[in-house]
Length: 118
View (cartoon, helix red, strand yellow):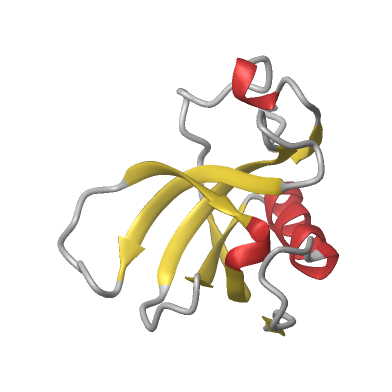
């Protein structure tokens, strides 16, 4: 588990690397976001530079569980990596959501890593 530095607007390369490792391994992560108290189970698809700013990095994927809404549906999500306050890489494998494709215009500013379907 990696703890984020307290500066919210800067990149968090440690979290970017942890997310890329999870993507490469095809495993879920559990994150805390934006100083929230709930854990979110997330299946990451891509870590990428945002469309608005190439200096900001986000992660896209599917949130499969939010401890604040345990019966909520799985939903596609994107999170600003700098606002992730905690990340735990699990060993639980997942299949990528077929809606995600690395050629989507969302990723036009560049992808750091993405789930490569074999």
